[in-house]
Amino acid sequence: MSSQKDIKDFFQIDAQADFDFVQAPLLVRRKEETKALKGKSLEEWAKAQRAFLRWTKDKKIFTEEYLQNGKKMYDLFFSEKGLLQGNVLDIGGGWGLFRQWWSPRETDVFIVHDPGLERFLRGPHPLHHVYYERAFNLPMTFVEGFGEDLPYNNETFDTCLVAAALDHCLDPEQVLAEMYRCLKKDGAILVIQHCHSAQPERRSPRPPLPKRVLKHLRYPQRLPRMIYKFLFYRKDPHLHHFLLADITSMLEKVGYSEIRVDVVPTTESVYAFQAKKKKA
Image 1 (cartoon, one colour):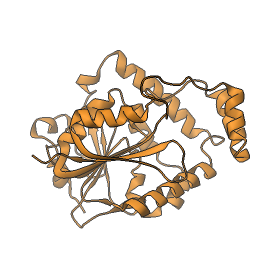
Image 2: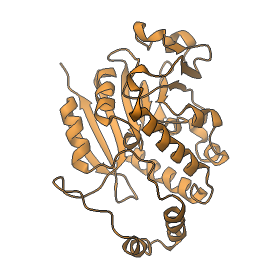
Image 3: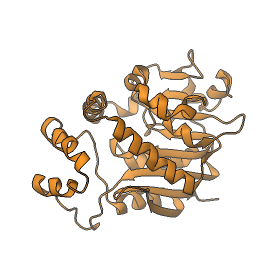
Image 4: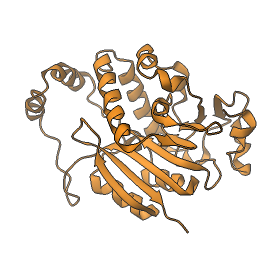
């Protein structure tokens, strides 16, 4: 759908020199580390990313059942919401699995902007190709980089998406602000994120292990996985934990309007935040 020149034209002129377009449109790599994100915070992100990579390699955690449930969840959600439209920017989207629910025109592009280059180059699990066959038959461009520092022109994308990734970002509000800048005047953002349901004024402490075990007894098949995670994955790879009000507050502060919040089907704590860019 898109030539190398097409992809490069999405980038701000001043930012083009920071990227290597030799492998475009499949892959666009940074020439050097993002200057604005150097320092201790970047080291913290890298440590959490390594923990996440270890988790996705563990077959006892990343099971076929887990993948099936996730695919079913999003099938139901997009059947109700409608498919992603137009030029799409997917922040933290890895292998671009959300192309599965994208309805492109001939010239539309799907750009995944993600710092996890190692995970992208390693490639998805073979099961992903089974369950996401449609996605892998649609084009995409993987751009190496952080959502806090997007290189794209203003008002470029019809849809901006960040799914199960905002809690991995160093500065979530800055990510949402950058997405706002890159959205067209009539563009829409979709944030899909696990959130706590505690009241905004006080976060509830995490329940003790026995209470969490009792909760999971409603789903006996999940109990061994939960215990295994507790024993071998005590360190949390997420940089943030959000309340519902945290996400809506950030969206409002950045300037989004018509904010709508829905529970994603088959889940109890995964929410979809849909909002529009305010028209001038």
